[in-house]
Length: 251
Image (tube, rainbow, N blue to C red; front, side):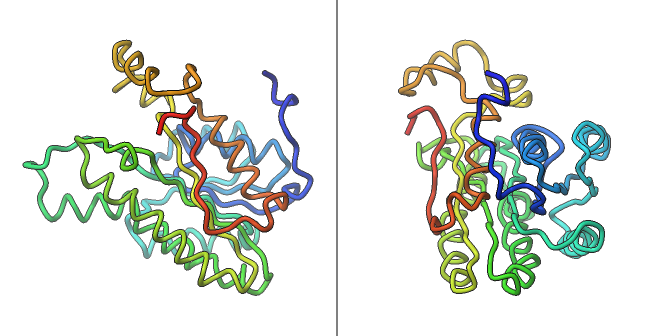
């Protein structure tokens, strides 16, 4: 289906949107989709080559940032504010589902997994919240995962971090709601990005996965991005503290 076959949201036109992990995968699709809606998009990523190329394709603003470094993260968000204005939408997308055995995990690795998959979400929200409070509006979208909901193994630090996104979302929604700021969790199923296809999407694995899905088709990055558009738009103005699973009916 062509882009014009899907919804356009007038309330997103001109809105300033900040997306983490926007150089590849789901994040890159979100950058493209929000840009196509006429939003003013900035994205953060540590991959300077992919980020620069994607910014050129979409006319979005790219800043290289290692989100594990909170000082650098705060500086990057301040630069976004200086260059294009205060984010009115934050999509906390960045994460990495590296596999790891229980026996291999040491404290430093555990802490790094939390920094990669959870900690930056809070500090991004903290950084954008003051301006959202002044404006009495805003939408924060935290990316979760069905991995912990379905009892996936082989990556306990990742599933622990992603399960915590639910609590973070509901807590922020309560704390920020009085100022008109909405906070929701978007929960992807197995999304067939280039990384997933290259590392884990062997035909037999895909076949087993499809047995669990109600809709027997691969869920793709645009399917996630379109839900993010709705959560960012004024159409969902009374929706907060919720989670939305997009997985073809797999959990």
